[in-house]
Image (tube, rainbow, N blue to C red):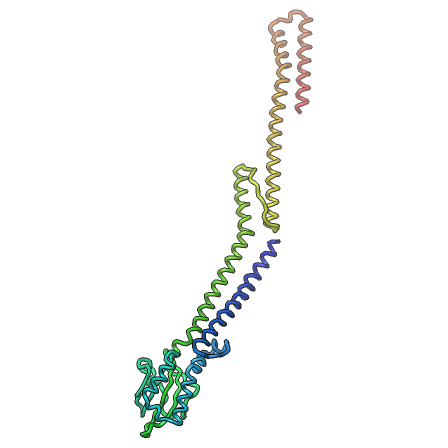
Length: 323
């Protein structure tokens, strides 16, 4: 595979693979958490509604109790004066981040959570402000928000009463928070894993062969021409490794040929030196004979001179062969 193709594939993997994996992870996480929400709160709702409008989930959590309170307030308001009955209703919604509060003539005579009531008591709607009831709930509070459902009624003595079903929105649905956290963690894991796989692939495809070439270059620089480079891929890097190996083999052959040539030259010079030594010795001997007067007759002198001339011709032939 060519290096260009690898880069294109890496580009698409970096974009498409994380998207597919994130979608798969998100679908799995959301599906699991939606089942958990249904099992925990007995609420069925579309996934997008739960994620985009979690307040509606809280509205549904207390719908059953609130509907019962409305019915009792309209038909049996005296039942709302039964503290034992109110405690039962409060216990029913306690694990749903909610509590009941009752106000009579402007004074709070019952609450399921005094601490939380103290933070919003001044923000609760007055008697008759929203009509007889607030079915869907109203949003009150600032940094610590609450969902409040109110039902007005009259006591047997004519007093004005309001019963509130208050849900703490600060906690929201834990599963929704978990979804966000898990999706962020999954996103980071997927991106990190994809980057690691691509980095490993690029390392094996590019960095590793380049390191092999770098080591081979250092070995050749140090004079080691036997260090072989083997190509593991068919891309441009692999072709570069093949060309480098051919260059190494050719360079080694040239150096071996050069060394052999130099050795042959040395041997030739040695042989020529030996061949030149014989006539040179003869010339030297006859020249010394002439100089010392050994050739004391014209005939001997002529013979010596002819011999010197012949040996000189022999040397000339050897020199011509060397050239």
